[in-house]
Each structure stands twice: as C-alpha cells, then as structure tokens.
Length: 113
Ligand code: AMP
Image (cartoon, rainbow, N blue to C red; front, top):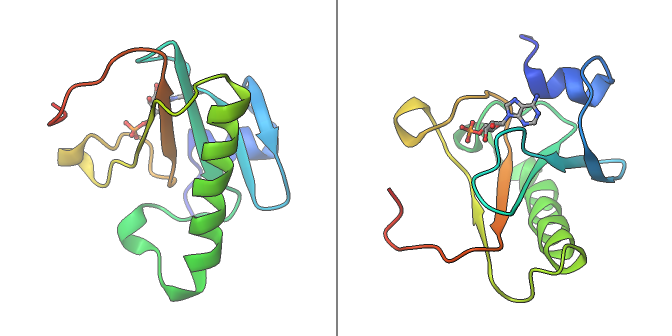
C-alpha cells in the first residue's frame, strides 16, 4: 500500500493541526485553506478515493459526514457550510486518501468551478 501525506499524518510522521480524532477518523486544518474554515475529515482506514468505497464502508462514510457536520457546529459555521469530495485527477483530487473537505466562512457559488 502506498503511503500518502494523509497516512503520514495518521501515523504522526507529519504534523497537522488536528481538530478532531476518534477510533475511525481524523480531522485537521487544510494547509492551503480555500475558506476561513477549511477542515479535512479522513478515515483512518486507507480508502484511496470515494469510487473505491464499497458496501462494508457505508457506516464509516456516514460517520465521516456526521463528524464533519459536528465540526462545522464546533467551528461556529451555523448552517452555512459545504462538504466536498473530489474523486480523481480531473475532479481535483490531489491526495489519494479519501477526504471530505469542510468549507465555511464565506459565500460559495453554484455550480462549483
Ligand atoms: P484534494 O485536492 O481534494 O485531493 O485535496 C487535498 C487537500 O489536501 C488540499 O486542499 C491540500 O491543501 C491539502 N493538503 C495537502 N497536504 C496537506 C498537509 N500536509 N496538511 C494539511 N492539508 C494538506
């Protein structure tokens, strides 16, 4: 299995500004924030991208979304935030360990760029 920046954050090899951690997941601030609040929620289990997730991952994926929503509350985002998963290079994925972007603190347009 190939190491990624995120697997190194999970193992503690690379530091990160961690805002939440439990048995299944880790959340930390994005190093290059695209909004005043920009947190990444990642599973500790290695899932390369959302397209690789399968039925046994359903509970974990639901957990990641619930955690992201709780962090949004803790970060004072109210009900205005966006969750994003980029899948594959053309969709903007640059780190091949599944992550949910939690973005908040500014207005967002639709459709996204
Ligand atoms: P994506 O382009 O959807 O794969 O998102 C990857 C995200 O990881 C980008 O927003 C990067 O800024 C962020 N990122 C890359 N390296 C780090 C790091 N060491 N700590 C925190 N965030 C990172």
